[in-house]
Length: 248
Length: 214
Image (cartoon, rainbow over all chains, first blue to last red; front, top):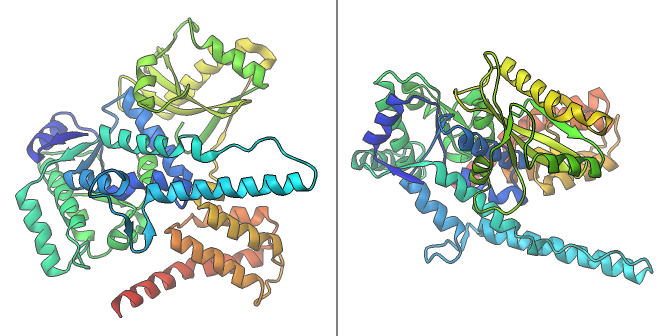
């Protein structure tokens, strides 16, 4: 992850234009959840994106904000003191992956025991919890974060986000401020490059459909459409779809 | 490859392994192995894949990186094509790179290997969770394929739709339709099921919001 001020990021993009892809924390965390609820095509698309950027760093510019980096750690690193133990009664993604792998292993063990009792023992089962799957998924999401620019905190954007909370406008209609801080930084970067003649695609990806969606015809929620339209920014509720849209 | 095409090299496991060994050294004129790019893509992930080969290009076609990824021990897929000296590859550049790949790396192996190129099709199981897949299978295995039983079949279909909603998954209608066709449901029944699919998520989303506001 490369920290960037809004000024530096805008300057770089105007000097060297390439498609701009904003990612949200949930897009990074979703990579762990391909074991449980998220489509495997998300992981496949991220692998294509990482390959494209390794071969050609000018292919597109993935961008997160400082909020994303903090949230990502909170949601994926169990040894971090701010790791959230659970969210609304749900296990956090790393714990859920561990739990599901344990469940799969236990079920396989049972099947093998039953088969053995029936006189047809099977070859020793693979222990999936020992294959390093979670570690590889975490590494993949960290690699994605590593190739992103992380926009540094800009007080005017934070102020605008707080105003959304006061006004109860999306994505702070439930008085949550983090999503608005993220969005305001993205909108501000988009404004700064557009005003300087940037004509490349600007895509905002977030699987957080509750706050940004629905994503009908790449449109965010009606309340957010004026903000997105003003900077010609399209919305995708899946990172995989956003990557495919870029032809990667 | 992008998501619209699926290009793979097929052969026996022994033929595939022997071919992969040849990609380790001097490959063919105009081709090289890009270990530095491979390392960037692998990062801290262990393993042999992806393999990255670079075609030097010709005529107006640019230098192109081709990433290989395993499908099985008898099949290797082209995961991605990336232009090295320009932003994007035009369709004709992709075609030229793939043809160069076939000519230089696959054809010399004779009948041992075959290159297949077909439109990419993402199956329903790629798009939904294992839990949702299990519910779909439970429904498809037991349902009457021509006339749905309102007390037995529809509740199982609703269980599947509720699971999709809980997962936050909205697979495209086309993927669902294809999966139902594959399970031999009649056209009328498919229409009825898709109609329920299109309305259920809205209703459940509204129900969730209703719950939150109370």
